[in-house]
Length: 506
Image (cartoon, rainbow, N blue to C red; front, side):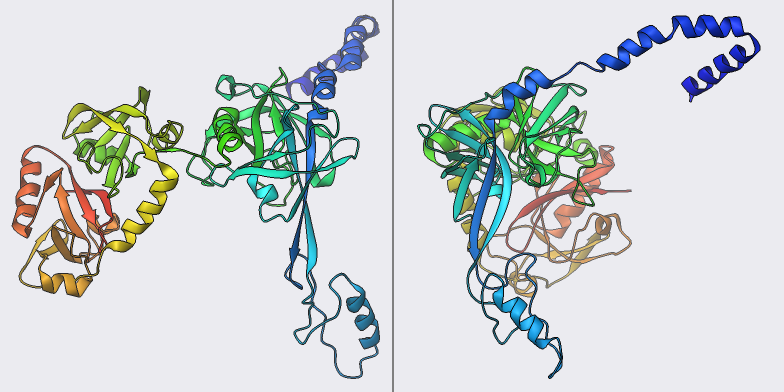
């Protein structure tokens, strides 16, 4: 708008004074014309050097009958319809063959899909792409820029980070490779280039900037995406995101789009996360992540205040997996991990990424806050893939039990009772759960706002165990006398799964 006003002003002056107009015309166009002719700095040389390492990934999968996307069932027409013969000929001649009683085909047919990938090792023929690009594929082909195709072997895949490693015959043709760069050095506003196979249009190049970093889009436990406005569309998945040095600093994997096309919000897996996964998949054919064996939840402002912390930081331990690496008392529910192996844990979601990147079997030092005091403990990491099976088993092991009976006590909008056999039976509470059972919750209370429900069991208050309703009341009164505004409750579900909740006491 400012430029428009300035141009209009010059034009009006010129109309009233031709001499001024003549000088303006004589002196302004030359540099203006020069800038238009040259435009912004070209990235053609960079694209030319990189495009040979970017490939299309073509997959095929056999599916039964009309189960594939876009398959239209044979329409049912009234008997004697003049269109019956036309539809019979059309549908019987399509891939899949003849129709059945349900108006569809039961013969297997092939469904194909396209994605992108890039070569990181020309001597070994290693190709990187997204796991979702090759998921469930019966056959994988790598298609090069000149149209040549090579069959690809799946070396390994990781669903959690959506990364897959493929291998082609490196002797079949000369390959061009690119290398990973350091995504941690990328800043918001840095230029990036995406090359891929959007909508099957192989070798497409788009340019943009890093729009944001450390994005969590709830796609997995290790979300740490680079956000970019470089155009990324369907078919770009698995393709590389380059910095201006020609290094891969991201693997394009997701977009936000109401229509399916690019609206300038794309996400790439950062190279610092991808390289460790790729190395493990190449070496072992699977991932081998470190495992601590805990359940965690965020440290909110209310929880931090309840624990006497100056600020909300770290990861709150909500439970310890039985048989896990720290099921020896080294880390307890209610502890807050603020440093792991020398790395700060500023937010809950930092911990899973740091632990997963640590070698299995490594002994590490962990700084925790326990009852307001900092402590350092040593733990030896297990393997996440083994731990997941153990965690699932431990969640199913708890036998069912029951709940309420006897006299109740009310505090914080909660009706409390002894956790006796009658209570266990009534609420189906497991035998190994200990504490004070909640029999009723005032729907207008602060406890109800935090999602506390009848049948949950109070295990601790402010990191002190409780075993009777009277102890709960006494702990609440003690916290009020200390000037605390919130009470930190450790609650157990009927199966024993723990969580922490803060409840206002006024």
